[in-house]
Length: 277
Image 1 (cartoon, helix red, strand yellow):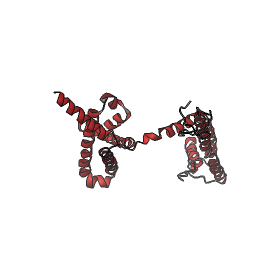
Image 2 (image 1 turned 135 degrees about the horizontal axis):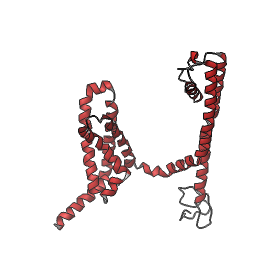
Image 3 (image 1 turned 135 degrees about the vertical axis):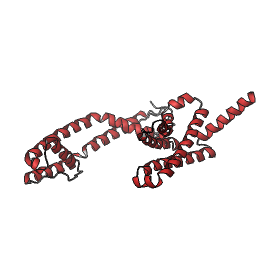
Image 4 (image 1 turned 30 degrees about the vertical axis):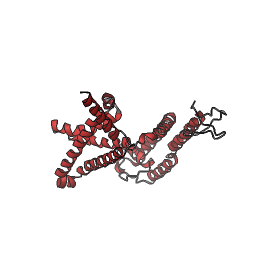
């Protein structure tokens, strides 16, 4: 009995080192194979939405997709089996993503009309983040998020101001052009103003009068003038946030501040940075 428990413990440790670890050759091979399977399965989902491909190779794609589903199901069960805390893994972000990767295929057996659920399988791409360990860039993402939060009030005021300008210009174009030139209502004129001021220019509605074309020219120039404002606001906040992060790094030997967030040694005295205040 004791020997059996030791064997089970040894097998769980080996499976854990292969599935969750990347410092062994078997773990790296597993990660590479998993990436290939994830990308291939998502590629099949995209191909299956093309009518011609679905009509020609729909059955082959379905068989291959079920093959990937079986592989991912076995992997999910092995992750639960080898995890130190299976419940914690199942409730984690990646545990939920792993479950969503296989759940839609089984739901389609119980609910034949739930074809839309198969699109949830695209969430499998999120699993690549774990394999490639992209979470190491989380600090950079937090920096960008903080900058967006700090600039949200300025961006909102800018958005509100632009909205007022768009409503005024849309109303003016409705009065100038009128329904006979395609500006059948103020909301439709506002739609034209949004399309024009964002420099998209679909061309489905165009002004025909000289005065309307003059207002359209002003709207286009206005769009080019204001399009860079939110970018400048966010850039300034990112710069300020980077400055705040640099100021947090202080040398315990000479008390010099202003170090990079990733610095290990003081640029002034060369002492090792022991703490981040």
